[in-house]
Image (cartoon, rainbow, N blue to C red; front, side):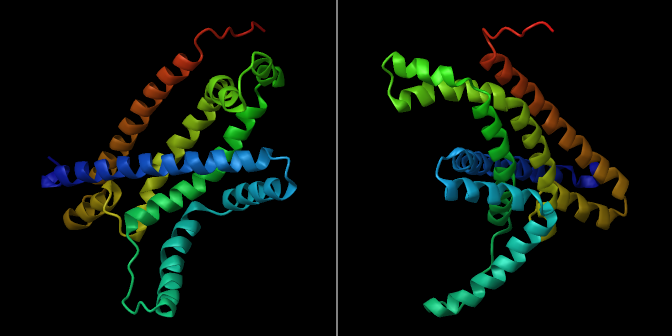
Length: 229
C-alpha cells in the first residue's frame, strides 16, 4: 500500500494526533487563564490578557513557529554559557510544536471562554450564593457546566484549525504524517498520491472529532430548551 510507505504515514498520523491533543490541553489552560485575566477587575491583568490575545492572533502561525523554534533555540544557546553550560542545545521539534500551538490557540480560546462566561446570566451565580454555596462550588457546579455548553462551538472550530495547523510543525523537522508524506513523495516522485492520502487522514481525524464533539455538546445541552424564533 502506498509503495510501502503506508505504515510510516500512519505512524506519522499517530504523532500528529498526539501533538494536537497535548497542544489543545495546553491551549485550554492558557485560554482559561487569558479569559480570567480579561475578565479581571484588576486593570493591569485585564490589559495583559488583552495584549496576549491581540498580539498572538495578529501574527501568522508560521511566523510564530519559526520564531519560537529557531529564535528560541538561538536565544537558549546564547544564554546557556552564562550559567556554565557550554554544550549546544537542540530544541525537540515535538516540544516546540506543543508549546507553539498551545500558545497560539490559547489566545483564540481565551476569547472563546471569555464570551462563554459573559453569556451566563449573573443571576445564576447570585442564586448559587443565595443557596449557601461557596465561591468554588458556584464556579464548578453552576458556571463551568454552562460555560462548556456555550464554548463548545468555538472550541470545536479552534480544535479543527489546530489539528490542521499541526502540518506546519513538519517544517521544523517533526516527523509527523506531513513530513513522512513529503519524504515518500520525494522518493517516489508521486506527490499527488501521498498528499491525497494525508488529506484523507486529516479529513478522517476532523470528521471523528466533529462527531465526538457533537455528542459532548448534546450531553451539555440536555434540558436546555431552544426558543422558537
